[in-house]
Image (cartoon, rainbow, N blue to C red; front, side):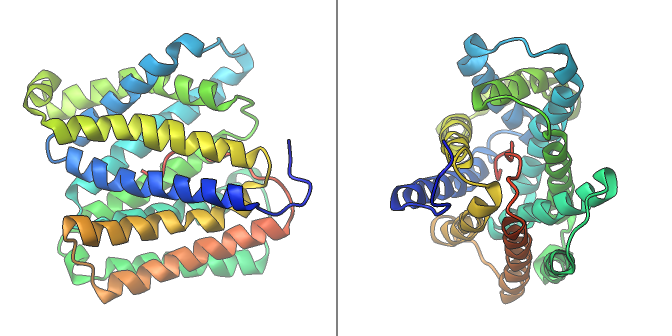
Length: 303
């Protein structure tokens, strides 16, 4: 039931805090798990666990939804996660991939303009420009210049989740159906990618330690089911644009946890570029909120 006041209550702010904590923690546990597991296999195991948990609750969607559902599963479930985990595995810190991931928000605005003919205000255009300038500033950090692949992979990953978000428009499915079918459909492609690119998955699975399985469980149960479950509760009461500014706490928290728990070294250029990226994302979100039109749910995790 939509909120009558249009404001977030103290309880709802508490739920947002739990979401941000769940998603920030996912960067840490996934980074540790990727020390033992290659990224495509890690993605496949996450989707397998979600399929096993939600498979019994799935209902066959109408035939008209299948093209859109297949696109969402491919963009969000396979390509976004595979590339984002690959980026995270190669990155020297948590901050860079966590912040660059947020560039999908201005990408959605640009894709909606290009593909759907939607117009946006000059303030939104300015916010988009600031966000991408922030990516450039972050990208010129010496540590990133010496190894630009993680940043490039995360930008492409952000593009895929932006495409998936556009594809979700008109996809009338609840959280269980959406997550379950995305996992079930994406399972075969990502397993094939893992076998072709990473070799025999059995060898990796046999050599995986406890931290790898904790990472898989956390990604599926906490980040996906708990994090997105709470997110789904909130967007039934408020526009996504009202929630998005608060969710920017998640990549900042992930960056801080990376410094505290993983001894990450983050340069001042990364912090400045990151601040520009997140301020641009905030500008887009606030402009969307000002338009007072509910946004579609964002299907994918922050990681």
